[in-house]
Length: 227
Image: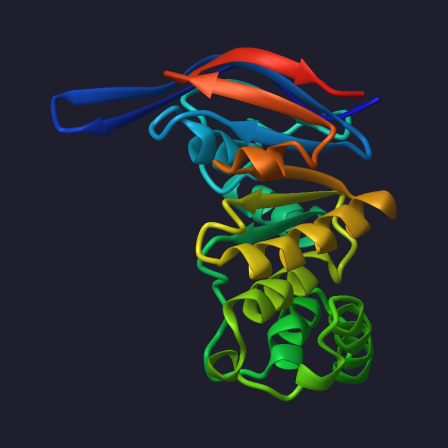
């Protein structure tokens, strides 16, 4: 069963008289519980596609269907609500708040959803422990390694049990040891049923997923089924 799909998705960026066509009619689907990698050369539209799928940016035309609902024509407020409650995001630069501890970075996202401070703390502690960060709850981002910071950002992204976890080059800023730590977390999450869509340029990490979708020049070149 598809949890996410697109129909004839286009994305143009307009800068004065210049129109850059980045996505050129993408038909794409993600099955519930799937771990999927989006790969392709620089400039192929990988991150742009992820931002459309995650409702961070608006497509120029085409349709996005999330869990059976067409979400393309929703208001910005409705899309924000879906992002907050149903989607999780991990970025290559971690995007942690430097003044907050590891647990507070996870808690703040939960409290925005209406959890009490104590409940948010309990959930954050559970997920950080799951990420191997039991002894790092009170550390600021500046006191954590890159791999630890990225695992905090993964904990923050999945603590509210999103329908889909989106990851944009999650290992790009990490060395190989830290990258493997983060990928082992993704594999564990997927084993527990988490749907994951990950943009990566690292072939060895693409191979850890169930399926690779290759983009080139804004079009899908092929779907590499690996089941």
